[in-house]
Length: 226
Image (cartoon, rainbow, N blue to C red; front, side):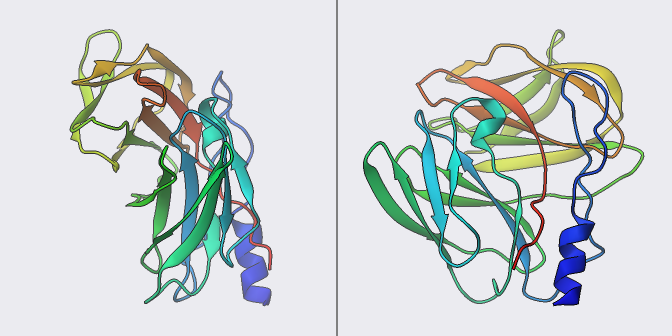
């Protein structure tokens, strides 16, 4: 029990970085106990959804405006050799889905407009001198998404498949503008503000109303409560 409490204390957010993004560094323990993983949920639809995990945390409501779509990572125990389940409800409709994750992993569960669940294995390497940028293709019908610098069009990530992600370490920068694109269209330019050393940032491409949109969220881990 003391060890689990230390995990919770060790993953609290550090002090905020400067800049419009107000990014915060996500701290990790050296390693999770055997059989544990980190899981977060993301709403990719056009209306708010409520997610009720079965046996691994309280219910949460995910909104439709930018980072309000993205939950914090939660510590989930006993993930080896079993499916995790969650009930999802939105607009008077409800459904139940299952997914599997590997022990010791970070995972993002995309909640689709049809309330289906799709687990994406994250890349979560940490550097105190560089930032970590991840790009998620959560747009229905987008077979290969691109994230590029704006202006200029230089690709940061290219060919990211549906319900997939790509990540890389990047140098800290005072101002970053990006644009996400797919064969179905491109998003408006996205101003990330300051990218700070040690920060963990996720950029999302979605099309909840049929039009490509992109936004950024800062990764966070919820304290472990038992």
